[in-house]
Amino acid sequence: MNTRRKAGAEAGTEAGTDAGTDAGMHPAPAGPGAGGPGTGCPGTATVPDTATGSGPAFGARLMAPLLLGSLLNPINSTMIATALVAIGQDFHVGAADTAWLISAMYLASAVGQPSMGRLADRVGPRRVFVAGALTVCAAGVVGALAPTFALLIVSRVVLGIGTAAAYPAAMAVLRAESRRTGLATPRRVLGRLSLAALGSAAVGPTLGGLLAATAGWRAVFAVNVPLALLALLGALAWLPADRKGARPERAGPASGSLDPLGIALFAAALTCAMVFLLRLADPQWLLLAPAGVLAGALVWWQLRHPAPFIDLRMLTHNSPLVRTYLRQGLTYLVIYCVLYGFSQWLEQAYGASSFQAGLIMLPMSLAAAVCSLVGARTKGIRAPLTLAAVCLALGSAVFLLLQGTGPLVALLCAGALFGIPQGLASTGNQAAVYAQAPADGVGAAAGLQRTAQYLGAITASGLIGLLYGQRASDSGLHEIALIGIVLGLALLVLTLADRGLRAGATGSGV
Image (tube, rainbow, N blue to C red; front, side, top):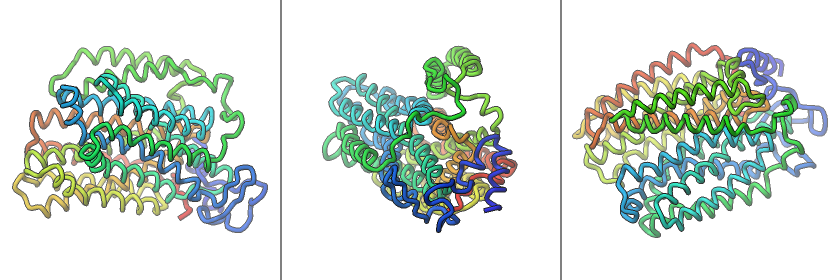
């Protein structure tokens, strides 16, 4: 316990946060169960709570709705891919228009994740989780019945907002459970959230294709209704009730404010940036001016608001958390470049069918899932993130050698090698955010982590369009690989030089 307290103190000093005392590295509070058997082994102890009626800490009942809710966003991000052609045919729109069904959800999610996280910190994670599930149900109904393409885009925006609630709310629930029991949140518990996201994103295209082929593309929207209802019922039955007046103890009178102007400025600046990035092949330079003005106005407003949407002052004093966001964004820029770029190359340059391309990419998904579990059982943070950066560079180097006439085994090995950093980086950065975020702001911090990921995805989409043009080619794939090598090496240097990872959250309950 002394070692854990020392580690917590170091993390709190370097990150400028309460990571040392609230990331699971604090002694159990006084009261029932405190200091009792099992407190020295987080993750295995049973701490009954008569107020909530829960049994084992971080048990199946608590995790079931959190996992189900957390998979809704990634599965909807990929499930739509195999339904775009059918949607375009029904509404008589082209590929450039149907691409907005993807971009609209990314934008809504990028803004919605920190917004919902902020709400979870202010009014309670259970309330936000329930509201998000209800919103997903509504979005599924609207999308399934949408008579126009414009309304379909609206449903995707609403779907992005609704699904954005689950992950930051889940992180806030886990922090609250850690406080309630006085036990560390085990890394394997955080790893399950990552595995839910990775696994659902992997099966998304297959599920979407199956639904579109058997029940029509509207089923891709309608399937959200039963999934969200299951998450809703689980939350109502098993998630602990939010404590009354669920607001940070240290917050001022304006802590309940959601800063709507800050959210609007952030959304507007992000929209301008997204449109610019999605059209890198034909740059819209004029968009940079309003994007810069909006970003400047956002910074000015956030520094003056008593309870800002994005706490820039906290980020200024919490450089480890900022570096974690940077790692997340750069890592997923490379990952999404390969995920989307490799699949298009397999179909257009290698000559595989969409079904064959999915099978060839299966080792990548399996490796990501396995490494997510391995990362969840790793006590440190620096080591898995270092290995992830190395594998990003090595995997990109293998893609640099691929040709449209290459052997199948080379494609399978390249995909498997690239799956390693997906799992390790996801769990590693998630654990870092959990440790480095302020104790009363873990929901908003987790939301910003996903925002960094979506910015990487949007940038990757623009780069793929720029490098591939009208058709995927060997040269385009090789240029993507070169970008991956450079960014992989940059991530390696950034990780090794990051002193804030020395005493990050170890989640030593595994």
